[in-house]
Image (cartoon, rainbow, N blue to C red; front, side, top):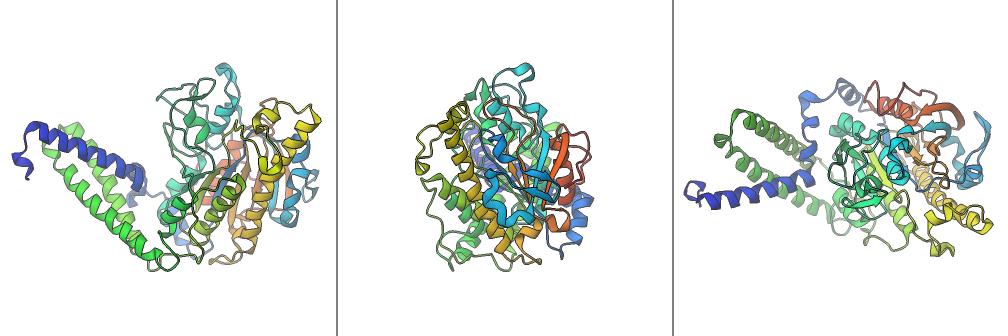
Length: 461
């Protein structure tokens, strides 16, 4: 039926339905992030990066572990290239030449300050943003744009997906989780703006199908092509529906609508670009069945997905929350029935300390498996994947018992396409972790002068 013959209530109902569809599309297809992808808004640094596309691209990923670390086991002995790994990193010994252990980094905005308790929530919010989270359990959350999303906004147009956000934990985007802080702070690493956390994908199967399509090997390209075509059709409908509003709006709202339409058109271009890929990557491996009950298996699946996404150049930016800061899950596979968080506050007990160490070794064993895979995987641009990545593994809490946020555990892995100098133990002194992020962003093609609470660059990497 033509909208000309609809009653006012029918028009209102139709408009509400279409607005709901538009919100859904913005969430699924990325329209909320569309404006940064307009060609006229692509930074000069990103255009320069595109001109060098024949070279192996740099990939960036961030991994957060909960509840700090046992300090004496984490830090190496020695300095520079003459160092020995601590007990926590013993499984990384075969890959020592690809590692940089960096001491002296801190996140001042994760400290209590005037806000009182809530270190775990602040740690989760501050880790990749360098900013202080507003203490609220309501909808008025506010923090900062995360380092991975600054990179995605600069170079995301070069790949099918600007970034990949994953988690091995639950999803909590409402309610209070830590001393009056919203759960969104604790369960999201990536923020596209100070008020918009990006909900990570907890299901390895869904993440895999997003990247490679559903079904068995050999059938995925068809399912992915159908999905792309469906998205095109829906966008066409929403675009027409949005344009029908123009005659009913004032000048200010028309400008807002024009901005929205520009975002829709940018998403259409991105989907068209995805559809024009001559060969959708289809790895010859089974589709993951879902989210395994055993957390170590979940970690391995998510690590493998990041490796596949980097190898196929589907994205160059990723984040993985291994567990929310404050996580209190037990590890029965290690014979540990007590919760991790509870253990970290009972380290004077030798048995509790030993169990905490076992958990940290378990985390590192799985990360070492991932590093091994990157060392063995050929990169289409040249060398191995490990040569062309920057991986930051660590946390925004250093000592889990005392909830400190200085001398943070920070392990930088990879060669960064020749931009990094691994195989070292680097003592940075006392500087904000955000200084490291400024330099990492520059290596990704996002030439920012500052980030978070940075006071400059940290180039000794």
